[in-house]
Image (cartoon, rainbow, N blue to C red; front, side):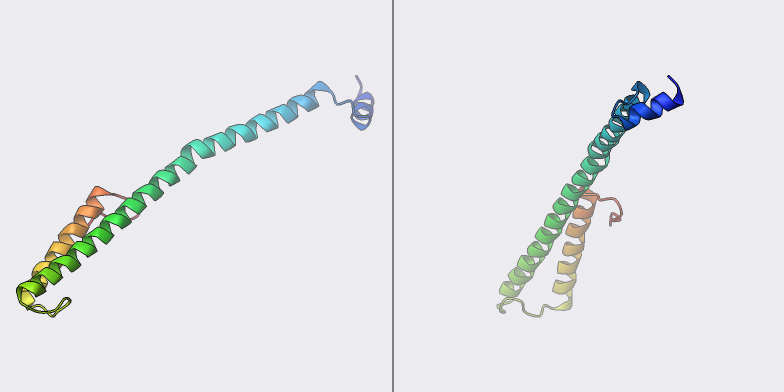
Amino acid sequence: MTSEDSTRSIIMGKQPNWFLGGILVAVLTVCAATSYYYWTLAKKNEAELEQRNRLQACLGDAVGASVRRWDKRCAELNKPSGCELPNEGAAANWSDLERDRGDCYRGYPVPGIPNR
């Protein structure tokens, strides 16, 4: 088949085998790249998002526990909820909160967020 015949067959809708083979290779390459992206990058991002959600929930629980401890200490002093605590009570509560937050960061490590 000469180049003129080849050109004529493409124009007339009769593509040679090499042309169809090239299209097949291109389609397979796109499919392989898409599969690679999904199974590696998308799944990794999904797992990281789940870990971030768990970390966020843990940090929220830590703050909630701190508020409850604060209110309990206020009640022990016969003061209303959210009262001003003496320095040692406030410092102890802050220390407990920092410990709980550290437990969250260590328990749910997320790339880019340092463990505290």
